[in-house]
Length: 335
Image 1 (cartoon, helix red, strand yellow):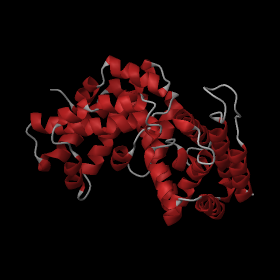
Image 2 (tube, one colour):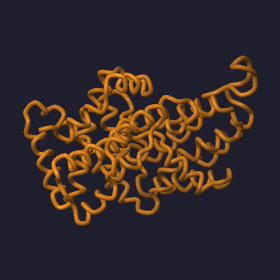
Image 3 (cartoon, helix red, strand yellow):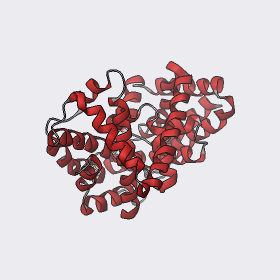
Image 4 (cartoon, helix red, strand yellow):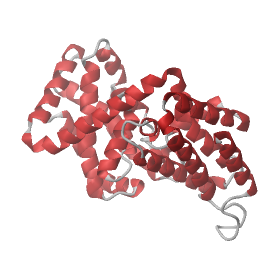
């Protein structure tokens, strides 16, 4: 009998795996291994959600009515990753994955990224809706109603875990979920201040990026450079650190939207940077230096990502006067 994971695996063909490898800068073999972990990981999240109070009702609302349509939409998602016109999408939209894996999703993505050698978070973002499509398809195929959803998911998850052939994957899933729990605990400890902590590095990126607009190509380069700097800072930090919980998934659309709404001006962006730093200094003083360095590295990477002035990449300056002024203001706010 075909399982949810079988259905998921069949939806990612060789061409899509190759395209994902190009988009994420990873070998197809690494992408295949990543998908092999992402499926069971997300299935565990779906099963846990279905088994919680009110979880089945919430999950049923998330399931697509036409699973084939959603799975077919993976091509559109891949185009978004590959296309230069959607800079923020290059890092993946994570809302569905967050719903299934919880607030510690950055810790999960960061742990897998360190193990597999590439940013796994966009892969989780793509696989999450595909898993929901596969669940919907399984319910229709096996004539399972809402009452039977949790038992079906639990049975398939337990069968996968019990198979000795899956021992390595199960260990990776377990390790990633443990990292997610630690990240969730860190987030919970900060309470309402967490949004400031998570937003400050993004605020620094936005302040530099908007100081001297670099055009569409330059904007893409700046976002990609900022995301790479975020991931590098998280990778250097301890798995249970503030940086791992906040930045382990790199940059995504939700982070950009959130900061845009909170801080429409440079003064507001500086306020966010100061507030995030103050929260870390108060709650995790041993990590504040590392946190400040991460903010500065993101700002610097953004400034150096694209040349300003010049024509068709010829001439111009790596860091403009306006960008340098923003870097100086950020450094002063962190002093």
